[in-house]
Image (cartoon, rainbow, N blue to C red; front, side):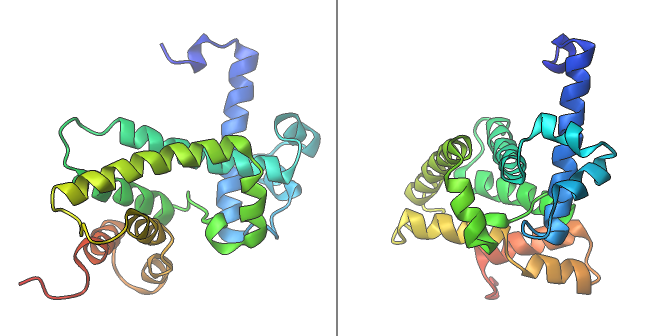
Length: 204
């Protein structure tokens, strides 16, 4: 039985509305960014009044923080659901593919990478910071395993590999390919994985 089904009808409706709010927030952030997004935008997109929106989130900062926490939780859940015995390098590839697919579908606004103000705001959100630290710890362990197994360059510091990996999730090449190439989403994902893990050099 799901957690949602255990709730009262009123609480279920509240949770469903909250999910719709976070979906709308993510879409608006992806198209307009944090500075231009307003609470009115979100309320209008969901089809609720602004007072109803404030019953869920007291400020734009809280709303954006919740959207980013949901994104990190999605990554953590994806990692947790990976099949046992999957190699470290395949775990990294699968998680990056997951992130790129969500991004291509408009579900991943990369706010911390584009705005100092947003980075500072999120660092004040303890719940968000704890989620990021948890994800980073798991990613660090996977990278270290991959280095020990010879799947990644052991001479590179773990932080260099991690931040290069994170950068791939917000590489602007993805948007350019989506807008200007004739490639479908899966081909874009496959190509970006190849660039990330094999580079541009001919492997033959």
